Amino acid sequence: GKDAQLFTLTAPSGAQLKVSNYGATLVGLTVPDRAGKFDDVLLGFDDLPSYERHDTYIGCAIGRVCSRIAGAQFRLGDEVFPLPANNGAACHHGGPVGFNRYTWEVVEAKPTSVRMRHVSSDLDQGFPGELTAIAEYELLPTADGSTALSIRFTAEVNGRSTVANLTNHLYFNLAGIGGSMRESMYDHVVTLAADRFAPTDEVNIPLGELRSVDGTPFDFRSPTRIGERIDADDEQLRIAAGYDHNMALRETPDYKPRNRGGTRAVGVEQGPDGCWARSREPDAVAVDPSTGRRVEMFTAEPAVHFYTGNYLGNEPVGKGGVAIERRAGFCFETQHFTDSPNQPNFPSVVLEPGQVWETQTVFWFPPPAAEG
Image (cartoon, rainbow, N blue to C red; front, top):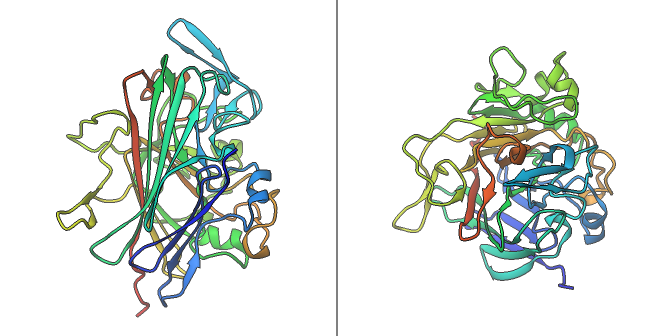
């Protein structure tokens, strides 16, 4: 097979991104705090065997379809495609041998970017059509000294139609690795530009409706500490043992997608000087008060899956010998809605031969403001 490799990308801001082609995994990202100290803000491991053993998708690319597919099957046209169940009765994150379990082919590696390819054969994990997926991770040049991590996925299918919903499952803790990471995760202050969320049944499958966040623990429209309501007496939080839900992002008016995949304007644009800048308000923000670190998320996807690491805690030992405890980090997984292949009310994830699936998400880290 292909050899697993580790690439280190460096931004003008001094930030460094470590990427492995095993699982197209984001291994680490160091960004400065308000005192200028660089720390790694991604959960992960120090060695390849730990990535091979763990089963909580830390930092990995997820495909062919992220999140759960109800009943481990879906209908496409006149045909029903059975899938392997690996999360109760559901097929989760592409099945037991999803894209996170493969060593991707490195297409191009540059000082600030790496592009990788994975070819998934017809009926791989039950999904029809031969799908060629490209993952590209890049540290974008910015005009203001920010660190901007761009994640791009493209996919094309040969032979017959399929379904595609690709994301990266990076876990953040902006306080860095060490100490009580659950407590530091709770202290993050999050804002989500989401007026609605997708409630689920008892086994975490969306009901097919989008429910208002008004008066619920899912209302993050103003900055709210993650730990403030995570254990509130709420049926949806009880089902998921915390936050583990699709948040419906607001539409970007006047945007017409060229291809399949992203349904919204990303919200960052490249200027004539080659530098990137933000062109609208972010879709999600998280701030760690202890370090001043802030991440702003911009995405072309219709939803972000906000997950608070409720099922972490049984992994191999994490970076620096620090155990990864339950709720040690949180995820902003940008995606189409969970169970979209079975949910006609949600934007379609069907990809036909001759079409291109493309999507981009940017995690933007402004220089932290000094305390004063």
